[in-house]
Amino acid sequence: MGRIPCCEKDNVKRGQWTPEEDNKLSSYIAQHGTRNWRLIPKNAGLQRCGKSCRLRWTNYLRPDLKREQFTDVEEHTIVKLHSVVGNRWSLIAAQLPGRTDNDVKNYWNTKLKKRLSGMGIDPVTHKPFSHLMAEIATTLAPPQVAHLAEAALGCFKDEMLHLLTKKRIDFQLQQSGPGSTTTTYIKNDENEDTIEKIKFNLSGAVQEPEMVPSSKPWDTNGTISANFAGSCSAFPASGSGFHYGPSSFGNNGAASPWNQSMCTGSTCTAGEQQGRLHDTAEDDNGEESERGKGIRNGSSLFNADCVLWDLQSDDLMNPIV
DNA sequence: AATTTATACAACCGCATCCGT
DNA sequence: CACGGATGCGGTTGTATAAAT
Image (cartoon, rainbow, N blue to C red; front, top):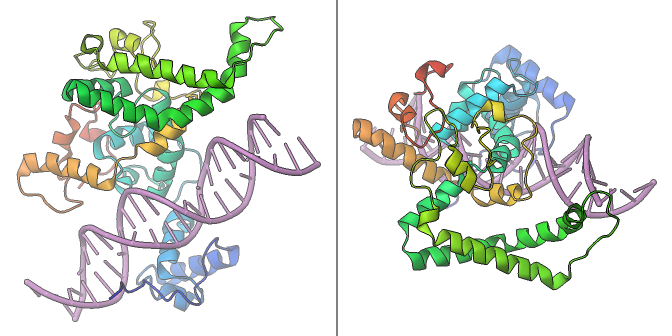
């Protein structure tokens, strides 16, 4: 017994909407409102599924939607809220007037996530990657760590090869200094050597607990500590200070060649996020169980020590319920 | 100029939840 | 309380456009 489709698949148009269709839908909704999406396409003379109409309206045609670029404040809000509620796009969008969950989701996936990765911060946990490595190293027994590192490096081998091949000439030009006209080429099998060296060094680093910072790498202002910054290749080693906030978000959040693979490879499932939220909420009131009810009172969540930004209830446009 | 690659965002899919009967 | 349809939500895919090669 299969699931009943939301609409008949036959005689239903799919794909991009035409201006004529937009007009029909907009004028129908202006007259009759948005009750009963299943009937709307039929009554409006559209060969579309009701679901498709609802999406088109909520994500594109609604008159209160903002079409301009996200502002710094909006970016800030998205990152702050994401560190608390995870991929709950509708909750985040509710704090951003004129933005839809789809807008927020797309903006996160195409820009913010990559920018965080480029800054050496895991966009799922909002912790520095090196901190996560440290956690793994201190949690697992050495043989497990070695196997995990081996597996992780195997995953990144292709990206490494790609990176090394693509960048090698630029790199060699840099090494030979400005004004130099000589170009040194690397033999193909040296890629393998390089990878082996990197693997060796990383394995060593992971197995040396004294190299791992034991305290939180950031202070209460969300600033990465100088010691930690020095041990994390993604952060500047100088004491110039690193702020995990909008001020560091300029458009020069230049993506490292790693960004794409890191972004696409480590998305947290909705289940994981919901599980985390559920656990937290349960501590507070002991009885929440259903999806979507995990966040009753934001105040306790805002104090979670995994977030790098302090988020106050006052920051919110709308209460999270 | 042609081709490839990257980016942005619209749209779809399937599951979860809500809600009326 | 159970059931079924409607709606909401998040993940994923498709496509148009821009940028790089």
